Length: 96
Image 1 (cartoon, rainbow, N blue to C red):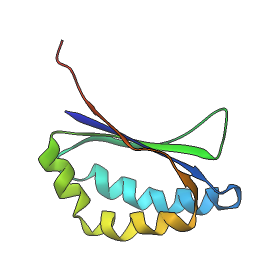
Image 2: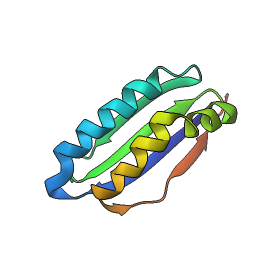
Image 3: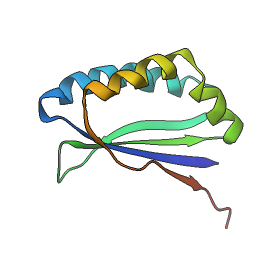
Image 4: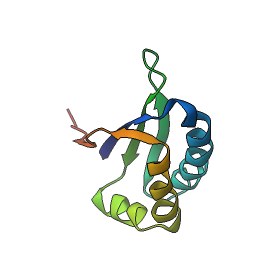
């Protein structure tokens, strides 16, 4: 399984609008066959700091997700809400 942590700082006056736009992306992404979980998280220390934490079955599932209509149409709208994008991190789950 592959986990993705996509962090961003949302403009203070755009947080509510960002949450509304993100809700559709989350619902549709969770319905995808290769999705294990998909959540949006807000920092308790800084309400502007948000991160999507996602878990996908494999790289093929991520590739399919990245090509979906909901991903390619909703994610670009986030630019209007975002003050800063932080590096996206990818993690491979270890089977220990």
